[in-house]
Image 1: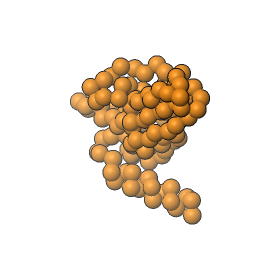
Image 2: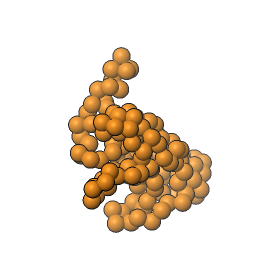
Image 3: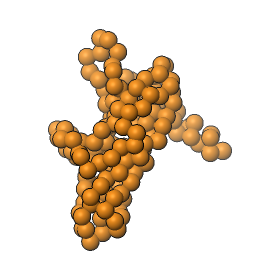
Image 4: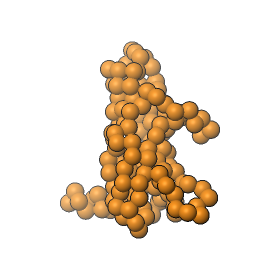
Length: 133
């Protein structure tokens, strides 16, 4: 039953993923913690017919803010996925101060887009970590 739900979820994800874009979900998540680190789990999905390498990286929360977020750890930051395969990523927001709300985007894209591709499509999830005061 769990495998059937997972298969259905990835079928829906594949239908909602723009052509030429990697799949990543959920597209937003938030959590509250009482310590200095908050972990998130995201799923990276390869919608292509061939094996591809993908990279994940953290940037600022605003769409025009490409500032690398050095307080974010991504495990693993690069992945090679077979056709229509997925992998869970562990994302950790570090050094949260008491009462702080930390927002960032976690983005994923192909490491090496095919020859002739002008735009390397990416998808980003918006994540919010809040530490209790």
